[in-house]
Image (cartoon, rainbow, N blue to C red; front, side):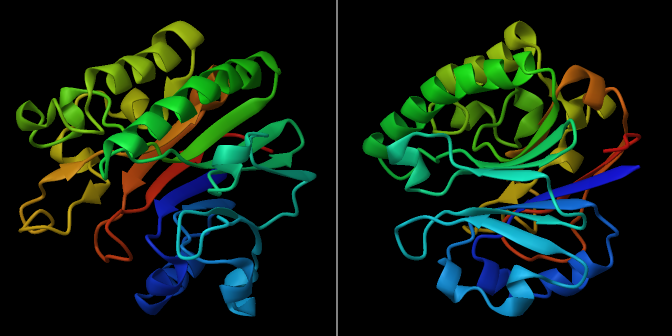
Length: 260
């Protein structure tokens, strides 16, 4: 069995103060993918670099207090790849890949476009370079799961107020069409939706800090595990953990009947 968790921490130091590492130690996960570290390498304590039985690998942003991704692995990877080979986005710390035999586990933090038109343009640039990378990964013959904050709710069931968000970043027609292309044309699988095709309220992984979004469960599904077809077919269970709050996102766990 392979247990993989993904979570946007909205700051690894903040999540630490909120009990994330105590929770993580109890999950018996093989790999944990992190996004939005908001930390440089020098900010990470030894307990953050290697908590318990895990070894951490991090791709930090050059800008302080911004972005950054990481992977905790219980078994040492055969190789770790930081970045996509694109200067603009590698400087923002958005991609890290750990390879275990024929399995790749990737932590991805796709840009948000909600703050400005400039950032939405950057999001589209990232999507343009990432689609061919996704095609190449699928053609590589490796089994791959890409975990992370994709900053896109794919369908109406993936957010509470879909009607009022159709012109907002994260639910724009172009973004949703890009996700559809990944699944329907390229051939990737949305693991959560494969197991839970019809859920709405239970699927959300992010809630705005404004108003009563958390209390009223006015959420979005922005965090995904997207896998190659053979790996996705081994998925046995998936869950979103909401009993504690470590950030504005919730952890997404998937169990695969797969031996790496």
